[in-house]
Amino acid sequence: MDIMNIYVGNLSWGMSDQDLENLFAEHGSVTSAKIITDRMTNRSRGFGFVEMSDGGEAAISALNDVEIEGRKLVVNESRPKS
Image (cartoon, rainbow, N blue to C red; front, side):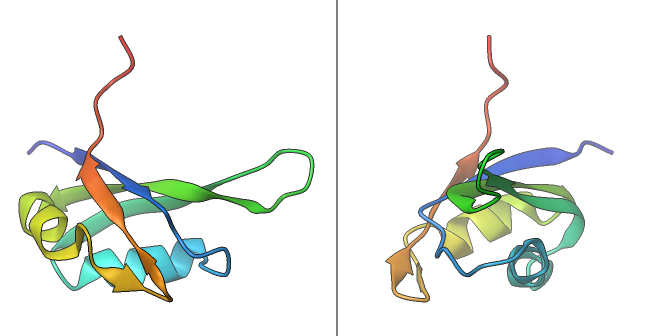
């Protein structure tokens, strides 16, 4: 079973890891959801990553370009840094 790592950008500042997980859980099995925060201020940097064991493709097509809390999400499969 492959884990799909999904990049989620343009997140609303008020969104939590749990909100992110709930959003993706509607489309499949979420193994982790993490919003990246600034180390100094601990504020959201506006993007995060979701790992899904299934439903990843469906989540990407369902959520990319969808407006959540006034911001259009950018959702795509995360590419490993080469």
